[in-house]
Image 1 (cartoon, helix red, strand yellow):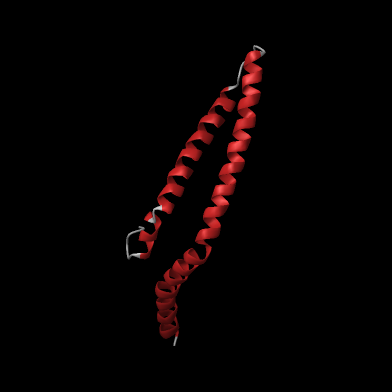
Image 2 (tube, rainbow, N blue to C red; image 1 turned 90 degrees about the vertical axis):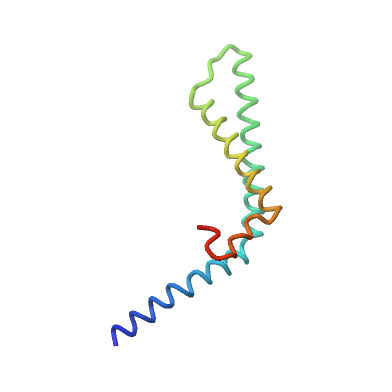
Length: 104
């Protein structure tokens, strides 16, 4: 009996979970992409605010910390990657995940 339950559990794990993940991807894809766009806008707005503060500090002869410069560089990289992802999404590249073994 334990062997049967174990086998059924393994079958469900190997068949239902991947199917559920694909269904979940389909239903939440648009919402997740829109959420990413909104978060990217928020991040860009914050970056612009920080850049204005940096520019004012430089005009006042203040030194900008390495952590601030690093943060600006990281934000720029994140923005670049997000724009690339969103561009790929618009051209349906991510739909390749529906084909077996294309996502892994």
